[in-house]
Image 1 (spheres, helix red, strand yellow):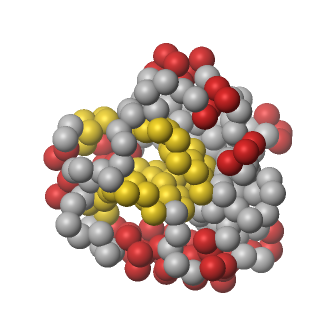
Image 2 (cartoon, rainbow, N blue to C red):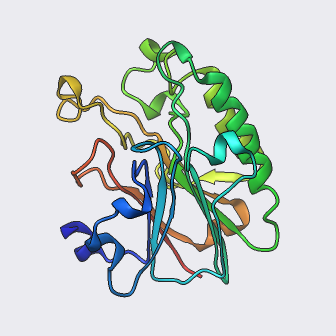
Image 3 (cartoon, helix red, strand yellow):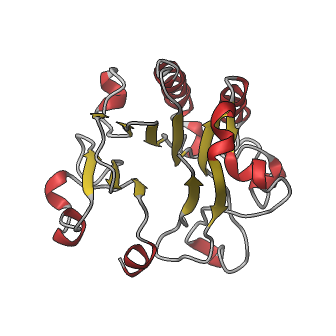
Length: 233
């Protein structure tokens, strides 16, 4: 909250809230000047995404329309006057890739869903639970068949780029090595052993509006760090 009070973002997207609406503390629910929207999982203490925004949206969408995905509370879209914003917590494929098929189905449904928003630009963000390229994780060779770096998961990001979506951080920082997630084990963050699995994607036509895309890896408080997108509308 100290960081939030100092930064005062126009919009803050959260993933894996693990909360139902009643679980949000008053200091989150009642921030002056912000609207709070949340998509919760049916299961307690699981998944969930939320958005705090100074910009009151024209419409809020919290479902793709497929029960097995919607019941996990992974998805929020805000329609604003000049753009759409999609905030998503993608499934983790888990050990032994137990949920790889589920994630592939989710990815397919997600891509189909976001392609329907054609009347204004759409910004995609969230925890995608996948490192796209070898530069995006510390030990790529050791992780080639591990959750978050399988060919199947990485191919989905390739598909996004074929549809005209740009990984904003990588566009502006083509050679920079920065990570957004570190396991709590083995002192990974202090040792620089991380993954970049959180993204902002925009369409090529909207890229001219992007002023800054960055990874705020000096901010602590989670096993993830915040990522930043500044746009001029």
